[in-house]
Amino acid sequence: MLPFTSFLFHPRRRSTVDAEGAARALGHTRCSCRHPSVSMMSSAALDSDDPSPAPSSHPRLRVARLGAVVVLALAGGCSSSSGEVASPSASPPPGEPSVEPTDPGPSTQGPARAQENDPPKNCAPASNPADGTDVTVTVRTNVGPHGASAPVSTDRRLYGMNIADWVPEDYSPNIGPAYLALLRALNPGVLRWPAGHRSQEYRWSRGGDGQRGNWTLYPADVDAFMGLVHAAGTEPLIGINVKTGTPAAAQDLVRYLNIEKGYGVRYFQIGNEPDLVDGITPSPEVYADELIAFTDAMRAVDPSIRVIGPELLTGAHVGGMQGTRDWMTPILGRAGDRIDGISWHYYPLDSGQPSPTSGATLTEAHLFQESADDWRPAGLAFADEVMPALASLRNKYAPHAEIWITELGEDPGPAAGLGLSDTLAAGLWVGDVLGRYAEYGPGAVFRWIFKSGPEHGYSLLDPNDRPKAAYGAYWLYAAHFGDRFVDSESSALTQVAVHAALRSDGAVTVALVNKSIESRKVHLALDGACVSSASQLTLSGPSLSGGSFDVNGRSLTADTASAGIEPASVSSDVLFDTELPPSSMRVLVYRP
Image (cartoon, rainbow, N blue to C red; front, top):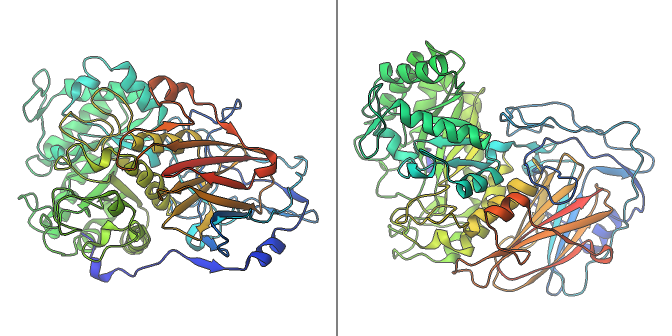
């Protein structure tokens, strides 16, 4: 567990200019524009060219609030006709400015690079905010978020998924067609299995026909899961039991997977939530020693494997953690040289606990709070506190490692039941929180959970393979967004959040999340990117507390998620002004 008391809070950076100054800064009418290259992220696209999205990062520029509308300013990338901005060419690790993913998944394509003979683009003149603008949003396309000098790269692992081993009928003996289609539509870079704490119970054994209700993991179970991995076109993260397992058993599992079967599994997770009080691990020092012993035994069989840990619980289990003791620092200090992915879990709420409110019943408003005095992870701004703190520890103890969030969800369940995580509000929370963590360039982020049983209400699909609003938010990102996050800022962050990214086809993608129950008008001043057209997809529903939603008026199903939903064209006279429906998420795609 990270020492919360030692974190330095980093508020979301804001700079302020007046509206007239912003207009002057955006007043050029022509520029020579070449977008930096970006890497392919998805298999779906917003238009007939089937572009893959590319995330971008964003510092949020604050502009004068005018009447009742939102203003979005996009900056960076373009220069005057007398010169042009060079594309960055270095490829540092995730979290640093980069032009392409450092660790692409098995299906990730290389970046498309601008050609020297590309003709210059005409940049539309900057427009003034429309009357009644509520919110001003600024996007700068040639710099990254949080002061990064260049866009921050992510890859398909941003859309990692936890797979429920307790519902094996979804993929064994046969894979459900709707289940697979909906999984593939998210283009996940990694699948985590066995999911969560159950990985601490399964013991590997060569004999038997499959676990089916006992706590033994057999070859048949592993083979069934690997069949799903291959069908989805992704790769696995396999959980290793350090609670009741042994280094010898873990070593034999690696031998089976990578030597005998040739599956080529790269990622192995050592334990799960050792800081949770249930007799798993008595201290961080003991866990560190276990990680070293297990890692060394496994690498004796396959030295190429990558080890993920310590899998610390940083969710809302206030009564379940061993106080506020710092687990992360002693573990990394003792075993940092063995760890390739520094992993932790993020849950802001727990409807089965009285924190962060005085009662067990939580509301949509709790998902959208920026901070909470009684439980610091409950606020959306926790991303700006925990990610820099983890990066500092990484740089000191494991500079070679990435930062992984192996469980992310509104509510850990199953205490949640069919509740907050099944609502439209949860979908909007995903639209905001996933962008916030992506801006720090994590190595991987895993949703808890893709699909669960009927008693668990925190999955992306219901028991009948119908997508929930949270799935819709993931789909908008995975199928349509860029993978190089750029600087962006909202003048009214608690009402409308903004995230922006560059795509490999040169498009700039902008996500706007309206957390208000009223419509909001947003003005986009696009500087640094030359655009000729735009289209949009909008996720919305009748009630924040309800589960009903659609995308551009169409239901999201296995068929529509796979084939795509037609984007709405944006009229050329209102390219930079948009009105968001109440409680909605909109992805705008600006094409050069």
